[in-house]
Structure formats: structure tokens, C-alpha cells
Length: 594
Image (cartoon, rainbow, N blue to C red; front, side):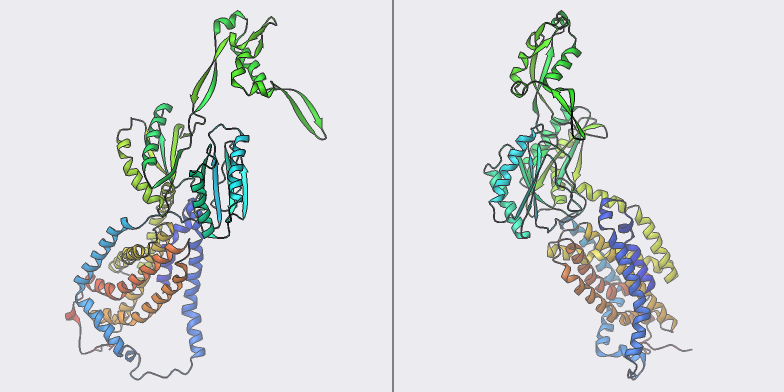
């Protein structure tokens, strides 16, 4: 029991020591389970026997002794089933391997997920104006959305943040950086159903023309490491124009897909920019230099500090610049008057011309290379990994035609899931090594250790059908459940092998030792499995723990059948135990004597 407990605890080690944001988010489950299981072992081997002796002192002896306990009609039926499985060990083993392969083939049909969406009642609304938009215009667009929300019955509290994201009031919420063209509205609704209704109503209102100058996006909180958009692809390369061209192709493919919504790029659309091109010959004729012109235009347009005014304990700078009517009208730039070297007034239109060029409002780099991220939301009822995988397949024609030095990488939640799984990988060798030490100290046999380790992945036989039937996705929490399930299966195998060895020490033939050990363990295995299943039933409806609960329920039910039928058959096949070795005269738990 101690070895089985330690194996189960060690199985959750990768979660507790994973160096990733997902490990930081869910890593405490290892420590909670570890302390709980070790404490339960002390209760099982010390406190429970002590309470049994104190509370049940007058137990009536069973006629026939300990062996008679397992000779009841029900145990006889269980014994016949187990003996049938051991007699047909090859058939049972092949059937189990086939079921495992079928379960593995069914995994692609299980919905994939990283972390589930939260059931909190807040609705998050992003109002994104074109990059470079003034704060006043962003505030006006946010006010339109806010005014519409105030009229909705589902909106109890509406709070708008203009120019930046909301402060972090939830662990997985990543506040947006300051941006004059961005606003975020947080709406508190009565419950989850009202939140979903308001989200659909807002999307219809936006489609009907609410805040037409902005991109309005309604989302909700998500458990786990933050990802701004569930589906995203990064386009990276050395040349800005080529990168933007590839990104536009990717964006068109994503916009044409019915599973995508609010597709956009983090660079935004190109915006017009004013460029003043100097005529160097005319500039020299007036005795000016490019630097002189730049300084004077800077003074007129943006201003320059000319003095300081003290206000109580603060000093406020006085900035001189053109009036707003002239400064904010691009058509009047040519009428500005500059000062020549001799004090003469020089109209700006005399020394150059104004050109309007389309430019990228923002340039983002990754590993020092220009990188555009094309991202979007997904339709209701879908999971980000499934949509990302399907979208990546649709992008293959573009990927295959990429010039040298350019690439398209998968980002979004599927990238975060990859980081989390990659963080688990370095801990697995340590986990397996520690498991092998515990197992070999218990069974003292390399062959027996091989049996124990080979049963670890068989939990998929029960997990995959359960996930498909319930519709629960296979995410990070389900992976934790699968790891814990592997420890449970190996624990059952360890305890069964230990019972087989005890029976052999008492003089049983190998065949009888296998059958009787399984009979002896049948009641504890079934009762503990049912207790575990019933304990996880309340968690099925949980948004966060539902997938783990379903994984453990299906794996525990399947593991019970494996423990009672497959393990004795595998042990008999592994050590070449034949029915001919059975001594029919002894029966049950008879002790062989010399």
C-alpha cells in the first residue's frame, strides 16, 4: 500500500514541478494530493485498524477460518470469471491491446482544449479604433457602447477604461498596455446565463451598426494562462512588405472560414501619414538646413517648453505652439511661416511639398524580425485547438509557397498548451526513474516491474469512450487526471502482485496464487473504485474540474475491469503460468504441506 501510494504521488510530479505558467496555475494539485494520499496511508494502516479493534472487539469467528471467507457463492462466481480470464490469457491480452489501440485511434475525435472558459458573470468588451486614433475619438466610441449597455437588463454594473485595459481583477486576466485607440468595458451581469445572452445581443447590435468606426469584441474570462485570442498565427520575415502581404493572405483564409469571428491583425490597417519632402536647392537659397526646418516645425506642431510656472509645490512647464485650428488641420501646413537666416519669413510651401503616404501604424518584432499576428475568435460550441488544427491545414498552400526566410507559426491557446506540455517533458524521466525505484524495491523483480509499468497507459481504454459520450474536451486538467489514473493503475498492479507473492509464500501453486490473489482483491478494488467514482460525480458539472472528473470516472471504471481480468491474465502470460499447474484438490486458499 505504501509503494502504491508513493507511485501515485510520483505520477503527479510533473505537474508540481513544471516551470510554466500552466504549472504555476495548477501545480498546487500535486502538493495537495501528495499530502492527502500520504496522510490517508497512515490512516489506513494505523488509525483504521486501531479503531476496528476498539469498536469491533467481539467479532464472531467464521467457521472454517480465513479461507472460508472467500468460499461464498458470490466469490465462487467471481473465481470462475477470473479463472476463465487466466485460462484464456492470450485472448484477454489481445483483446485488451486491441481495445487500447481503438481508444488511441479515437483520440482525434475527442474535442481538444487547453483551459476552459470561466463561469464568472463578467462580460469583457474591447473597443478597438484604428491605430493612431486620438483618445477623444476612442472615448466617444466607448461611450456609444456604454450607453447601449446601460439600457440592457442584463447589465448591472458597467465600467469603461479608455486608453488602456482593465486592472487585473482575475488571475488569468492580462491587462492591455496603454493605447489611445483602445478601450475596455467590463460589465457585471447577474449570472452566467445573463452574460451569454448579453454577449449575443451585443454581437447583433454591433452587426447592426453600433459604434461603426470601432472593432467591438465581446469575450469572457478564461481559466489558465492568458491568450488574447484563441486562434492566432504569426507571420515572420525580414521584409515588411512581404510579411504584410503574407499576413493578408492568411487573414483572407481565416475570414472565409465559418468557424472564425472578428479576424484581425495586431498591426492594424495601414493609416495615412503626412510626409514633408524638402527641396534642398531652395532650402540653401534661403540659408536654411534640414535641421532648422525640423526644429521650427517641431516648435509649431508639437510645441517646446519656454518657461515654468510654480503651482504650490509643483512646477508646470509652459509650452508654446501653434493654435489648434492651424496645428490640427493638415491642409494648413503649407501656410506655416518659417524664419530664414536673415530674419525673412519663408512659407513652408516654398521649400518643399507635403505628401500623404500609407504607413503601418505600429511595427512589432519577434526575435528582431518583423512579425504580424493574425488572430480571431471562434464560433460558439467549438474548441480553440480543434479550430487551430483545421485552420493550419487550410493554410498549408500558403505555407508551401513561402519564400526563404519567411514562416507561419501557430500562436494562441494551442501554443500555450504546447508550452505547458513541453514544461512537463523534462520531469517525466525523473518521474519514471523514481517510480522504477519504488516498484523494484517492492516487487524485487525486473519482470514484475515491467508488468507494473506496462499497465500505466491502459487508462485510455476507459477515458476515451467516456469523453466522447459526455462531450467533455481533453485539456490540461484531463491530462492531470490521466497522469493520476496511471498512478492508480500501477498501484493496483503493485498490490495485486504483492498478494500473488504472499500466496506463493503460503504454498499455493502459481496458478492458484494468481486466481486467489485477484479474488481476495476483488472486493477492495470494486469498493474503492465505486467510492472514487461517486466522489467525482459532483465535479462533472464543474467548469474547471469537469474534464478531470470525467477522465478519472471513465478511467477508474475501466481500470477496475483491467485489474480483475486483464492483470491476472497478463501476469499468467508474462510468467508462463498454465492451467495445468493448478492443483484441483486444494481449492481456495488451501496451504500446501510437505
